[in-house]
Length: 395
Image (tube, rainbow, N blue to C red; front, side, top):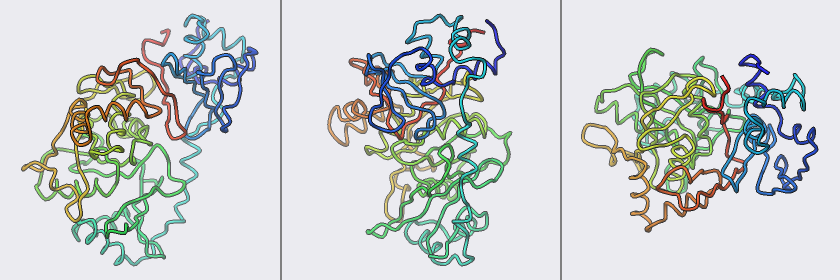
């Protein structure tokens, strides 16, 4: 049976749990709220919609390296031909089948900006950003002017996240370390699919830009300052998504909101967290050679974009200046070089071992990390963006 594209897409993300109940397929709880496995195939795990950051019911068939929505469950696990998918959904779940809630919309309305109101006095936070991070007075004043940073009544600082419309959707709270350096933590209620963002030589949505992705917003600001000091050419947008890649879906969301970049550069540390961030992005976004596949505007529209990996390692006062070349540009690595550099700083094979031991990384997708093609399944912090590809669609 043929249906409209929007209706077909809605069926694709209908509840796997409801489908199992309707078909009489037995499943059991994993002992953790929102996680289940089939009674006769405990390697097939289902994560319920609304658990963690999952926008729809998602299955992970670990023994086969498969994952996805109801569409892939019916066509891959149940073995029902793609052309019969709609008939199967209508027969088991009815014409109203589909996701129960719009997770992204709900979360965006939840952030309470009033908890992070600016007190009107900026001396304490300004001094910390200049002395402990090494930002210039001019840059710090500009951040306050643009309401990208605030000082709270208790003297703490918060970097504010904004969407393309200027709405505040989250924040990164500044914290002092014991060694007189500074770090950040994501504010409670911040929207998972966003992050701290700003531009360099970026004027409007018509500008072609490179997307620089950081583990920490302070690293992003420090690198911005280096570009400005050297008057570097190029148009960039900066995005901070947190360490170890726990919020990498924010990149997909960013591309769909701000437009497709000409290239993506992951500015990661040569550390466990940096390697995992790079590996998760490269492997789970169809990495091949020096390109990845990014969703342009919907689940069935992808584009190939160049990707590289930079090392803006944080250092007292200088932060990243020691890692820049003479013209202010970073030293970019390919994914293979990222693995090799990590091994050189640790021990031979350390990169492969760490990736293979990390849930949520599809290590079988690249020859550099594949032996047996094992897929380790999800964690509560991982997310599965819609996994339908153009080849999956029946039209």
